[in-house]
Length: 224
Picture 1: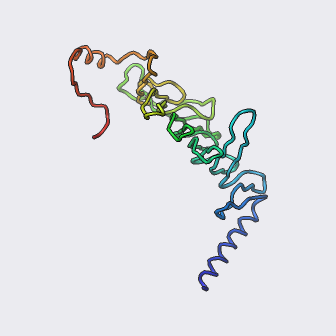
Picture 2: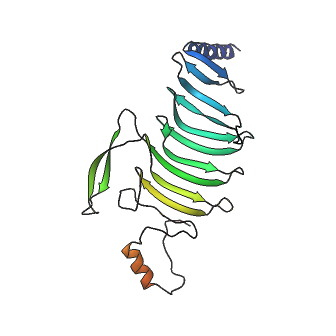
């Protein structure tokens, strides 16, 4: 009983000390401190943002964490019925890493890749293949004009069966054809769409050699 009392007292004391540094806050149904504003008016800690339906647009709720008024880490968006709509990741208040978006039934619709730039340092050093010799890597210093750039694999899915309808790769805001250092991507077009990316010579030669053959085994990186 004494230990329980001390634990409760310690928790209340820590909460009281924390609250002294806040202008305002709310207590969630779980007892957590949320929607806190510090004395300077900046959002801090866990937040739940509610948006009402407006002009035909559905309402939604978002939950995640702020540091000094900037979104950080994973943020989740739900419709007002509680179904997941999106999982986004942030750094310095900008999208960073994998972003996922879902249908009203919870099926994955698309994935995006982004990279956030440090607002205090708009320059970045990257390794890219030498234009004269793709086998040699060279260091390049670039200045970013925006705070977030497309970076990584982007995919569009068929929500009915999960099949990938389109896949493309981006490298620091530029479409990657495999020469920018990002490794390229599937660059698969949607059915009926023609690809503007030419096939590598090795692939064209292989297809020509094996034309008309059946049951050709191809290694595609999958296991099992």
